[in-house]
Image 1 (cartoon, rainbow, N blue to C red):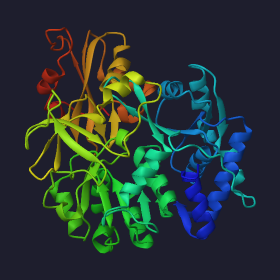
Image 2 (image 1 turned 90 degrees about the vertical axis):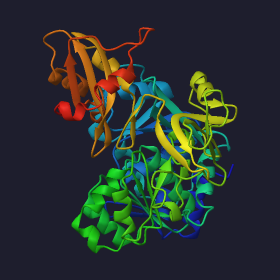
Image 3 (image 1 turned 135 degrees about the vertical axis):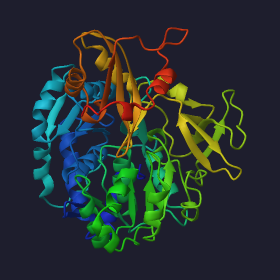
Image 4 (image 1 turned 90 degrees about the horizontal axis):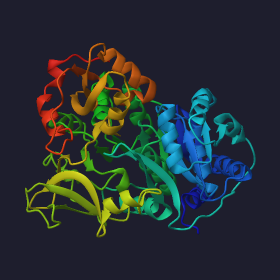
Length: 505
């Protein structure tokens, strides 16, 4: 089938091969260079015996070779599994087991982490970036194994309220439909634009709204290895960046730089912000520079962005996130499935072309999330008389820190393994920088302190999951009549945890 990300890359390489496709730390790849290099990568993956449909993990921080490898996996007909480099071996093992990955590609400095991951379970083949980096040199190459419209091409893993990782299936159809819908309105993305990516490539904003969007539309994607606010401001001016997306802390950090006041950032036609509450002050700061920050509501299962405020309402309706899109519909429903009245709280459900067909090898979770043609978000919201959606709270027990989902259950399980821990509840604590951060409330006997909890978590989970607040108590945690911990009562008791207790890290 021709309608794939690989076929789009081939077209732009043939029609405007000299245009810059990727710029990473000031090193650029043209579309012709990206096409040839990723084709050689695809050929190497296929020659290694990776069959179409088999899963391939790509592990590592933002770099020039990461997107080349990702495109090479797709062009080999395999299924891309982006792997967060901040995960510890046990966490990586879970994702690799869930996906059934047969090959993992990582920078050589991750060799120790790969070895420890291999020791924890079934074998998989491991190769390193350096083997594929040397393939940059060579002649013209258009190697590609085509996949079908509804074939899975990527699995994006997201935390669920159960603490179990779930692989969100992306097909050729869903990814290309997301791009198509994003271009249809006057405020939409446009071919020939330049986007700046300050977030990790491994998450939905990086894979879908960064790499896929750029390659399909023939755009230029400027990728930074990390957020450096002063440099970000300079890049917006230097490259006349048209698109920037991120969590509020990204826009706040940029706005705080002295260079922000002096730099013309009006080239930004599309500035998308989400993942945490956006303050009116932040909206006003960017509006004063001629940029309307458009708030979004979305989830990985819906391609990352399900709705965004229209530019004209970005400042006049700061608490809302739009009313859907041309093909994506949202509504708010009661527990019995009937539509909620305007202003009445209910669950946000949605349907549209970017919605996943399901979770990888998880029919139970798929059936729970996709019901009667609608994706059930597990989030509470309201709609006003004009249909604008306002996010209220999560029905699912998740913590969102810097736009990344964290399952409290996962951290509770890790802390529960410590000797002396009787019971534990992990809740969200407000954080000025990240929006939310984990707080662990632990009932334990004598001898256990916060430092031991932090050290234990630090060995087993990614750093952003390690609690920044740890409360050790001797009395039992409140429970419901059915014997389960009462998260509502615990949150209420520790709603002021950030002022009553010191940060432990």
